[in-house]
Length: 86
Image (cartoon, rainbow, N blue to C red; front, side, top):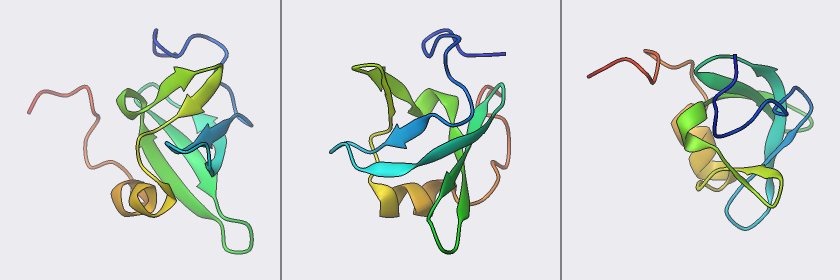
């Protein structure tokens, strides 16, 4: 299942970029509520990026956080699905 705003072309291997175009990581798996993004070269880190935090600009996947902030926010599995009401 894909989110409508991302379209069907989101797939493993796509790059995820930060606000300045710097690489955050590469999409490793696509889920209904989040993307599993692998970040880092020597010691890879998995990021669990909520789908609502991702946008597509100029055909590229982007988030508004830089690499460090993305790690701080998303290095642990989501505690609940983003679509659940609070």
